[in-house]
Length: 361
Image (cartoon, rainbow, N blue to C red; front, side, top):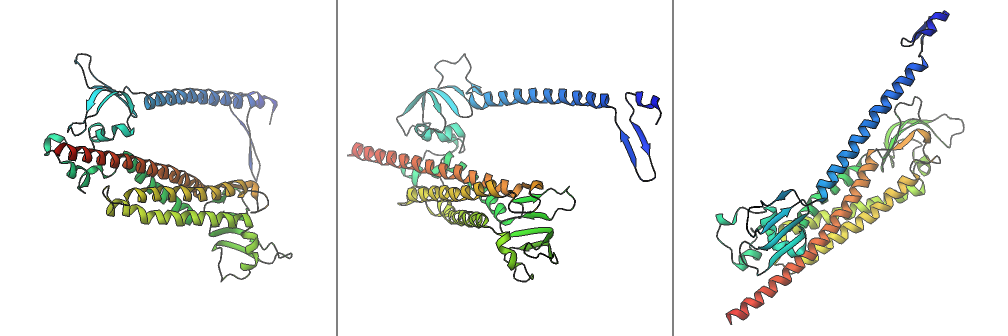
């Protein structure tokens, strides 16, 4: 290259040989590109911060809908996602002599008798006859068998089951960077290991290599059982045990939840006990799963286990396990909240029945 070609500020110079082409970039151009990308990133961060602030404000404030200023003595003042403000708001069926005033959290137990009005859980009251007290609580077709907490608990429970089941079955807990050429390790899950070309760690002559995906307890591959202690160290056995127990408890909950949905109602003697058991089982399952993901997260990509540890990373099956365990915590807590709400409803129902009998007497 001549001396004049190096003075060009924008066009990279090229050196061509018989075997390859070498590109030489001017450092001033790279600096300009760096400054340009940096400015774009700053603008994106500013917009992200503003969007985050707007979402937080909208999420936490109670002014999504407000009453007009021309109304006299409005029962409704304003409402947001999680809080509503009312003035002498009463049950539209007039079955409870309770008037709500002030600002309340919408999931508060004191507002459970207004769920139909606030959350529109049922078709309008004017389109149906007013139910009796017995029909209100004991008719299986009435939608108040579950409160909003119970419905959220069911939805999050389904998500937890899907995520934990996928994490339990898929071989992507630990994965090697696919861009690395010559890597010995490919990926692994709780029950499957995949290698590109793993030498037998106990064969000093390096005459045996393992390739492809195999079940950990594969009885057909020669020599695979001999390296099982290398493939499954004690910490990984602990991960398998605790996550398996987590999955088993989740399956137990999968048996109990349909009973809660289909077989038991608020009038049943063991209805509250069933909801409590579901919540406790889910939280216990989440505790076991937490131990598994914490241990694997701390030791799964350590240099003392799989080869080429510097190129390995925790993959999406592990992430599914973490999110699934967290969803179990949330669902279990919501089931316990549902149990507490149903207990309060049962006590109020019994109190109302007692007052009705005294009035008739």
